[in-house]
Image (cartoon, rainbow, N blue to C red; front, top):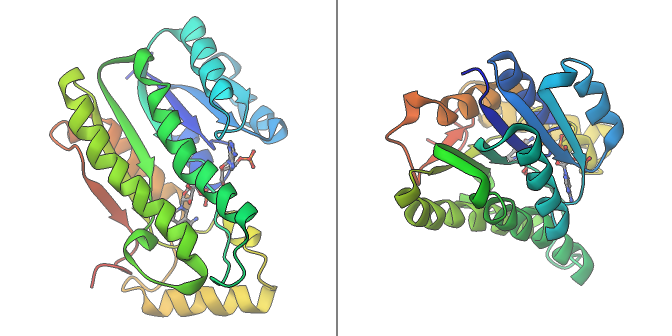
Length: 246
Ligand SMILES: NC(=O)c1ccc[n+]([C@@H]2O[C@H](COP(=O)([O-])OP(=O)(O)OC[C@H]3O[C@@H](n4cnc5c(N)ncnc54)[C@H](OP(=O)(O)O)[C@@H]3O)[C@@H](O)[C@H]2O)c1
């Protein structure tokens, strides 16, 4: 695994941070793209020569272009791209504004599309792309109408990218987490009592009886990136404690 390179968006928090830590531990060089420099700098201290940090916005194509260019100058080709950056804005259909709608589409859909498109020129042979979807892509819930649709779009991109890029030896898969304990939960803006109540309800409905941990998604990403997944492409791996499976 030594000298393999992973490029990940949103690698500074939650699931992305757990993925960055696990890939680093497994000998990868890790290139992280997210907005907050402060959190990325903290992570870089773990292994300064093996971590490249870049502050940018996934909805700005120029930022993505610069990120891949600098990553390539530093380490050469990329072996794994993980389009993980995302936001979740819970809003009833009647409360969604044009601005919040556009923000979700720009980050969760357009951002994922161009995270992949801008990476293609830098991908090594037998590389792997992993897109973060969600079990919400296949479920219905009023407050998640826009979010769920962006994640369904990501599932769709997985299939099309897998078909198009297979000829270059590139595998493309998505990961659909259930509810995972990350800072995204606090960003929902629910008051503490309502959040606790929601998480309790989710745990009760989940066959494994709890919400997930970021590292459980990271382990799945490491598998999809590895040779152990060499015949898997176009697939969606759902890591949700069974919540959406039964
Ligand atoms: N946690 C869950 O229950 C869950 C379930 C299903 C799917 N997911 C998906 O998993 C992914 C990671 O979620 P998480 O729970 O780890 O969330 P998180 O802790 O809030 O992390 C989100 C990451 O995305 C980055 N990001 C957000 N907007 C960005 C932008 N415009 N440009 C660049 N980076 C941006 C953030 O960095 P900055 O703060 O620096 O912008 C942060 O590093 C998301 O796609 C999410 O939809 C999560």
